[in-house]
View 1 (cartoon, rainbow, N blue to C red):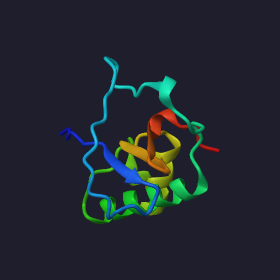
View 2 (cartoon, rainbow, N blue to C red; view 1 turned 180 degrees about the vertical axis):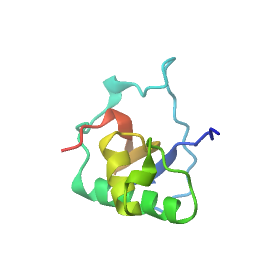
View 3 (cartoon, one colour; view 1 turned 45 degrees about the horizontal axis):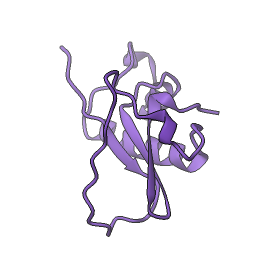
View 4 (cartoon, helix red, strand yellow; view 1 turned 135 degrees about the vertical axis):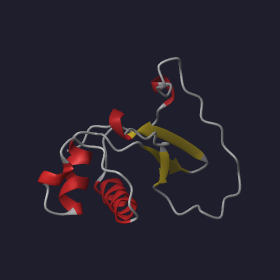
Length: 112
């Protein structure tokens, strides 16, 4: 049984009150235009924390794990860590600096 997952945008700033609608344009290979990035493609510890919290909540709400053989892991935290390590979590990171926004797929970021 396979299930399609939408990519969620994880907002890394506190501009939740901003009512603007944004259009995200991907190229023919579903990648963002890397020539327009103004931030480094490295996952910050704050972004990592937010991703872990969000993905843990999804799994607690009965979302299916995205890794093979999840039954070999003892708890949800281990599953989330392995999904992150394998870059299987379908999140888009939104970085806001001033009135500019930078978007990265989690799979495109370097995890330190």
